[in-house]
Structure formats: C-alpha cells, structure tokens
Image 1: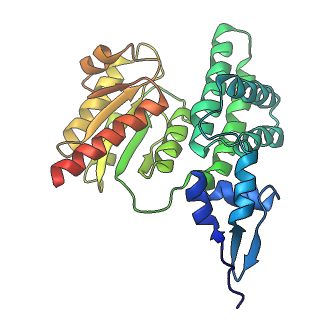
Image 2 (image 1 turned 90 degrees about the horizontal axis):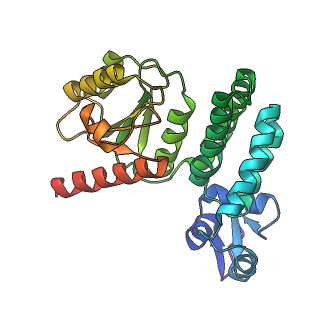
Image 3 (image 1 turned 90 degrees about the vertical axis):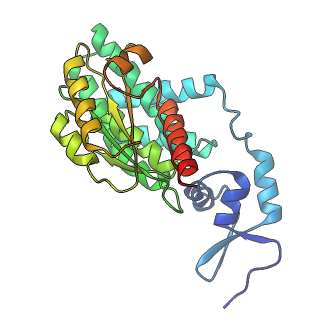
Length: 285
C-alpha cells in the first residue's frame, strides 16, 4: 500500500486546521479547489498546497453583511421561481466561499424565508409563492443534512416543535439542523404539536437538556401555555424550556407563559442550550 509522504494531512486534519466542517474540505477537493491525492482509501493534502489554498481564501468569520445580503437576494429570486437546482447553486456558492453549514440556516435560508413570509403577509406575494419557496427549502434542508452532521460524542438532547395551531415546520427543521451541527441530538416534532405529544416526547427522553417551542402564530398564548405546562409536568427536573417566534413579545411574555427562556434568534437558541449543557456538566461534576 502506498504510504503518505511527509508533510501530508488527512482531510480531517485539514478541516481542523481550517476550522471548517470535514464535508466542506471534501467538497473543495472534489471540485478541484484544493489539490489532493489518493493514498489507499484516503485523500491526502500536502502542507504546501494547504498553505497556498489558505492564502486564496477569505478569513473565516470575515464575511460581511453585504455578502450575506447578496446571497439572500439570489436565493430569494430562485425560491420564488421554484428553481431547486438554482437555489442549490446559491447554497453551494456560499459554502465554497467559506460559510459554515450552520451559517446557511441562520444567515441564508432562515432570513430569506422570513423575507418571503413578510412579503406574503404584506400582500406583495401570493400564498402560492410562499408554498413553492417552502417546498424548495425543504429539499435544500434534505441535501444539507449531510453537511451539518458533527462527528464525535453527542452533547445531550433537545426536543423541538411548533405550538398547536402553528403550521410552520421549516423554522423547527432548520433549528434542529443547527443544533445537530453543534453536537446535540435534536428530536424534531414538526408543526402543530398537541400539548400531550410534547409531554410524551420529553417523558424519559435520554439525556434531555431542553425543549424548544416555536410560537410563530399570533394570539396563541393559551396553546403555548398548555404546551409549556405539559412539558414541565412530564420532563425531568432541570430540563429547560425555551420559547421563541413572532408570537412571543419578549422575555416577560415568555416567563408569563411558563417558559425558562426566550430566544430572540436561532443563534440565541444555540447559546441557551450551550449554557444548559454546561450547567448540567457542572452539576454532575
């Protein structure tokens, strides 16, 4: 078997050095952007080629708001047209320019679908446009699922779902993918989940850290409160309850509904769950 040369790295080692997902590095190699050679059953990248590649790439985390706005506008146009492959090209273009897989949910797919929803609510888009865009986005999420998986030990479980009367499953699915990308097990219950089903899902759930409830529908406090109560009654002590969405006015509103925390954004959900995981770890020590 051919042996790797001195100064060569595996794709996993490259991903660690670049600070990106393994699948991102693999895509660089398959598309010819990063030179590599086969050694046995593995790709190997020379340190010299990696250095040259790094010089040509934008610094990670330096992508400005204008860059994301450009991707969002391009994706908006493709989603409205129902163009699956064109939409996927926008997504892969963002990945190739250095975006992390979870960035796509939080800074591309989520904001773009929010814009489409707002324009539908304002009457400038037909419901058919919104449904067509949602269908394409569901397909994109399926393709992205392999990119958001994180290797290694799982860090705990989060149960997610939309409140009764809320028929939007996309925000829940995107949030579940983001949490998986950060090493958590995400149990996605989807849209319009009855309170007893929330209770059933958290009862005796293995390594449960939190339940995250999406409340996008307005004037739905009774159902949200009932769902929070069902979770509280069935979950083990110490399990946090997070609520968020346009149906929640703020932290005081969330607290009045019985929740432990109000999430303002998808990134905030991740931060809250991270805090809960660290607290659980500290208590167990």
